Length: 127
Image (cartoon, rainbow, N blue to C red; front, side):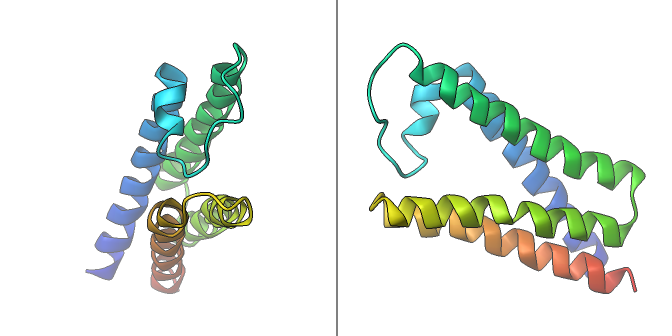
C-alpha cells in the first residue's frame, strides 16, 4: 500500500511541476502572481525571465517521470529528495524577501514536505 501511495504521490508531484512550468511558459506574469513575490518591474524582459523558470520546472518534473519509468524505487526517492531542495529554497527566499508567508509555507513549504515524505517512503520501501 505504501509503495502505491509513494509512487502515486511522486507521479502527482512530477505532473504538477510540469503543469506549473507549462503555465510559466504560456502565461508567465499570471503564474508569477501565485509564487509569493511581486514582480520587480513591468519591463518587456520579465515574461522571458519567468519562462526560464517554466523550462526548469518542466525538466525537474520530467526527471522524476524518467526515473519512475526507467529507475528503481530507491533512485526515484533520491531524485525526489534532492528536488525537494527547490521548494525549500523558494520558501526561504520568499521569506527572506518579506514576500507572502502564506505562499512560502502553503505552497512551497507544503510541496517540500510532500516530496520529502514521498521520497522517504520510496527509499524505505525499496529496502
